[in-house]
Figure 1 (cartoon, rainbow, N blue to C red):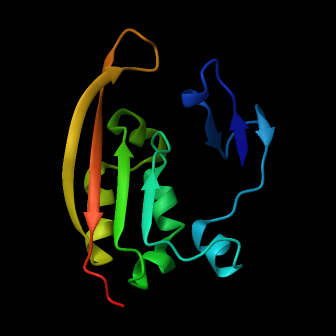
Figure 2 (spheres, rainbow, N blue to C red):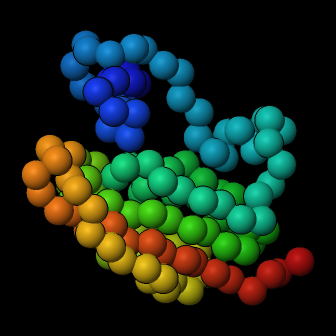
Length: 131
């Protein structure tokens, strides 16, 4: 993958296309946990400017095991299209892993070109502890 840097840190992004940016190694959350580089999480917070579903898919085994009780996600619906996914697809994925999903906050923010308002959605996915 390549990290493409922009004029503002919140606008940096990872891409698999093109030759621009810095080449970086990428590991999934499952790989990090299975290699004991991080403990199994009780709570996960995701804010990745549109790549939320990719992060969730990279944690699929971890989320399926029932150890994680809460997932907080800051969604940027305007950015999800770059990753060919939707808010509904993310919610459905979490539901399939045994989570109930609630929208806990929504707000409008200035978009990437500083002249358009964009929506942000804050989700909280919870499940009863299975331990």
